[in-house]
Length: 114
Length: 114
Image (tube, rainbow over all chains, first blue to last red; front, side, top):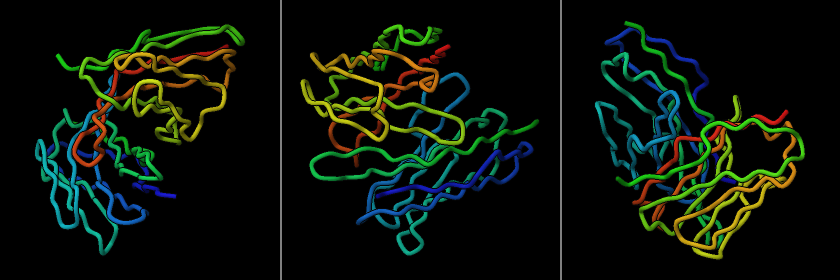
């Protein structure tokens, strides 16, 4: 079935460092891809998305590009802040029969130190 | 304010004592879903509903029940909870268009079964 693999955490960075969180997927066709973020004590919220190959999703300084050649959707940010500390989830839309669902990676915990 | 509301936020119970976790959304979304989040396993889908009176099993439905009698509500029922159901639970909803409509999550219910 469809699946998402993202880099194991935790990731610890200093403020203003460059961030990359790797995400690769296995799926039939070309699913829409998402990054969700979970701040402490909260539910997940959508960070960015891309619906077709070569699309770049961006939000709050984060970016990810849909690469069908490498089946990847890596998350990047040029200069992280303490407030970016959270758990990040890569996800895709999986369709089977008449139903669809989001399939999530296992999450990567990011801690940014001042 | 558009939101998904889960109650309670925290629940401690004993093995075998039936419980219900409520979920309500005010966005008129057709699609609703329950996930559980466990360390090292990420989010796994328990049940989902494509519309009123339409529910289906996700990846880990054993030990759970759901109902969708109204569009806004999607309660999760544990008829006879067991310690392996200790977890963080999230309800989510969206329009029925996975490509363009993200999932909106509640803030979670942390359940402990002793």
